[in-house]
Image (cartoon, rainbow, N blue to C red; front, side, top):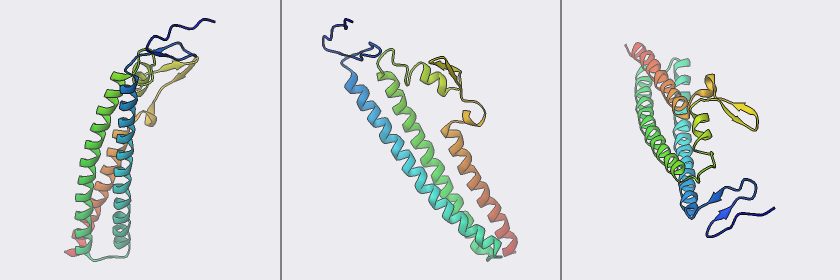
Length: 171
């Protein structure tokens, strides 16, 4: 079996897709995307832990007929922290989107990892790989953005509920 010439580029033996001289740029874009992904995960996790602790303490205070003013202050603090969480989440998601766009731009032609099939699959379209069909439907079709925003909204709704209970008890 003869192999294509390798004049200044690398060839993947299994697919014979030529990797041009911009592979370093593609690898750098992938590293930046992974950095954004790690930063997004760390930020989301930190806020989630903080929200779970605050929400748990407030739920316990509600269950034990806690002071109305304590509930009002705690719910207001939790709600404001959730607003900051949402703001940080939206910013980090936008940075992640930007890095994904860079990876798609720099992906070698014919790879279909982030471009082509990858984009179609992420958009909820049916994609066939090795005669198997893949599609994100129903709850699996929710994006990370939608799921994360729904979680933040649930915490915010919980704090509003606790705020109402606090107002009733303080009255």
